[in-house]
Image (cartoon, rainbow, N blue to C red; front, side, top):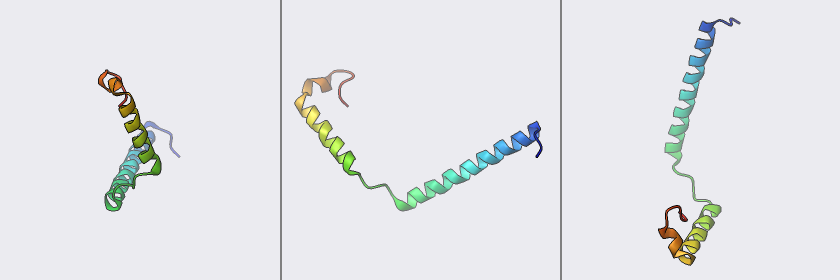
Length: 67
């Protein structure tokens, strides 16, 4: 295989085009399938944060507090 600058440029362009085609295909699949269902861990994390906000209301008022 040739190892010159043109060859490197060709493969970089080919790799970039392959990446764009892959991302476009994945976006189409995501649009068709819809969002993922919420996981149990996500629900638990939300409940834990709400409990922390209720337990420490003044922390939420300060910059850099619990988000």
